[in-house]
Length: 317
Length: 232
Ligand SMILES: Nc1ncnc2c1ncn2[C@@H]1O[C@H](COP(=O)(O)OP(=O)(O)O)[C@@H](O)[C@H]1O
Ligand SMILES: [Mg+2]
Image (cartoon, rainbow over all chains, first blue to last red; front, side, top):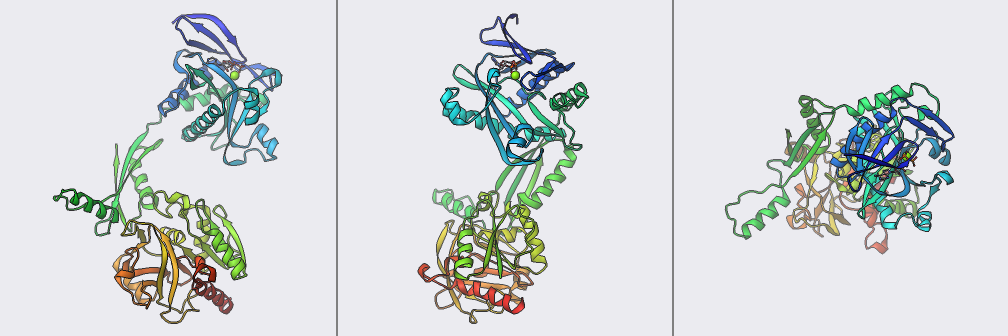
């Protein structure tokens, strides 16, 4: 893999061409800016943290069915990705009020949204990245309606995937920004995922764990970036669990009865009993395997099964 | 008297209940959102029918853990009047405020029609305006109304006269043919030990005006008003 000419230098990354067609290298910088470039500084080690964290998060998202531009981590602060024709719309998903949203709605900071809120911003430094309504996006011809719907639903899905992911690591994902682009006509998630582009709060202490530390001069900026990377790097051994819920012996199972009748009328006279139940799979994180069974049994007793009419069996993988 | 109609995501009979209480009974009524945690200002809570939380997992299984149900449970434990209609009944069962559980109708059909119900106990807050063994004509509309409970509890419920409504024919005979869903002992409505919690599959709010073809549902609403007037 050969690094070729610089294609673009932004505020946080340099994008280089490579000898591979359609592939680019993102070099993550330590420089930081805020408030549309009015505030500038350096966060030592930020480039490495953001490259590494993006690598981890993009791989995790890919594993959960999100298509991204990500190929691999090339060095400490370089990512190899597909080149995308970027759509100049930033998609923001917000779970809690913070920053401009708190101001716009007049909510106290950290108010939880009733449902995740999606906002669109025009990625345009000259205009100061203004917020856009769907109609503006249509007017400017930035993205088609269907494309925008797709970006919106992917963004919400990313939220569903990452909220519990960060929660398992003691972090609340308050909001985040995504950028999308097209490769061979297909929509892919691009850019980065790092403390530069999201808000993270420590679940226990409430401490700010993202770029707001820099924006608001809260101190311990480098340490915080490093701590977020440490938590994100933690391998959370997932435990896969299967739960079988079936109608209790002696309890009438109307669906099973009907199916039994249908099988017999097809000539399967040997069938004497049909019981129809449910098969539920769970994946737990941050639980020891031996504790997992106890937890899942409790879940069965409380919610997954109704002990009056149903039996259940738990299998830990 | 002040009623609260509890609304879960997926409830769909709340407006009918509200209408009957407001326009027919002319009593005070509010909607109570599923996130509400304080229900102390009400004299009677109504859990209406519908498909709370899409009936995912089991009917009522998820609604039972919504914030308002903690308040409803505390309210009921202190003797507050709670009526669960159809899906509301299923929620009360899942919450353990009433004994037993619901299976799918034996026919596997969603059944939506008028049925006849015999009042088995007319000395309750919910049936004091009914004559002994009066037959009420009220519609049902459900897929899971096939009530089951263990034999010991069933025996106790019968002894304590907590089976309040049973499916019957037009003459008041409780027969297998008049059982629409396979429900144990033709059970259509039951009470808890204190008789302050009532669950029933039929929809009294859909039989509370002449124009709807029956006003037998009013027997239940008027009973609870009478009970309130007497007992305060
Ligand atoms: N896969 C990709 N292909 C091409 N451009 C990309 C890709 N992913 C992100 N970009 C763009 O590259 C730039 C990354 O550098 P950055 O410093 O974040 O720029 P900016 O200051 O414009 O946000 C951004 O403009 C971003 O939209
Ligand atoms: Mg950027």
